[in-house]
Image (cartoon, rainbow, N blue to C red; front, side, top):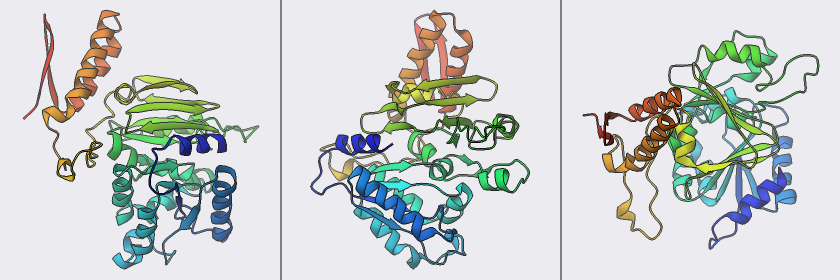
Length: 338
C-alpha cells in the first residue's frame, strides 16, 4: 500500500508545515512486542512513504482508557494536534475500543479531521471505527460466542453511515478453512449479521484495498487491488471495485436505512470566518437539503427505470433523515418532520 500512501500525501493541500504522521498504539499496546510493533509502523511510513512519523500511546496499559485521569491524555492530544496525518492500525479491535472509547481522543480525532487532517485506519483500527465492532480475537482465537461490541462510530459521526466495518474481507490464509470476513468466515458473519442492531449495515474492505472518503471534495473512491462490499440485511449487497469513484451522497445513499444525519461539527468553508462554524444537533432543512434533493433524484431515476425495490430503499433512506416525503404529479416534495 506504500504507493497509495505516497499518492495520498502528494494530493494533500499545500500547508505551511510539511506532512507529518502520528500513529496511536492503543490497539496493540497490550502486546509484549508493543515497542517493536510501533517501530515497524514508524519505519514503514518513514522509509516507504517518506513522512516523519511518531508513535504515541496512553500510560497504564492495564486500564481502559475511560478509567484514566484527564491529565493522562495530554501528551497524546498534543501529538494529534501536531500532525496532519493520523494512523490507527493493527492489533485487536476490542482493545482499540477499550483504550479510546469515551475518552477525549475521539473528540480530538473528529476535531482534527474537521480542521483538515487526514485519518487513515487499517485492520483493527478500521474495524473499531464502525458503529459496531467485531471482536476478532475473542471469536477466532478464543472461540467465544458470536457477538458484537459497540464501536468508536467515527464513520457514523463523520458521514452518517451506521455500519460494522469488516477489514480483511477476502482473506484466504486459512487454505483449508474459511478465513474471509476478517478471519471468522462467511458462515459466522451471516450468523452475526442477524444480530446487528436495526439500521446497521456491513461494510467489507478487501485486503490491499482502500476506501477513500474525501470530506472536502465530497468524493468517495476505491483504490488498490480489490473491492469494497456493502451488505444490508434484507436488501442484499453491492461491490465497488478498485477504480470506482462517486459523490459522497451517492455512496451514503447505498446504505439505505443505515444512515443518520452526521453529528459532527460542520467544517468551516474555505475563506469563511470562524463565526461561520455551526454546531448542530437536530438538522435544519437547509443543512440537509443537498443530500435530500440528491436522494430524491436517485429515487426518481429508479422509478423511471422500473427499479421499484431500489426506489423503496431510497425512500427509506430519505425518511431516516427525519424527512416527510410526499409524491405529487409534479414531483416529490419534502419537509422536515417536527
